[in-house]
Image (tube, rainbow, N blue to C red):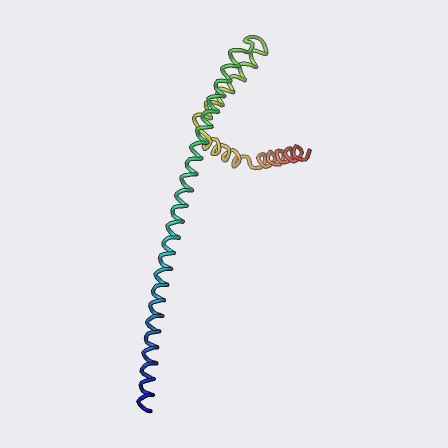
Length: 149
């Protein structure tokens, strides 16, 4: 009987060792799988960030191109006003001023682009915060009136 008890203990110990080995292998496989998943997640996040940056750059370039085209259109409109408007008298003077303003605005938009306009607007607001706030309130009031109707 002592022999069978020892044999049972040995078999139990063998089974425990095999279970420990299997559990260790499973833990190692789990760690490896978790590492692979983490690497894939990092790679996907990096790809998403690159794609977002590319999209933002494309949008910025498209906006700058659109601003340049608007500037060209404004300059053309200024030239058209100058050519077709009256040349003499008070109306002629007003026509020349409007045409000059349109042409200058078009040149400014072409040269500076939207980023330059945004920078100039930011500087203007910093130099004049209270009038800028009052203008913002006025625009908000007008928009509220228009959208309520």
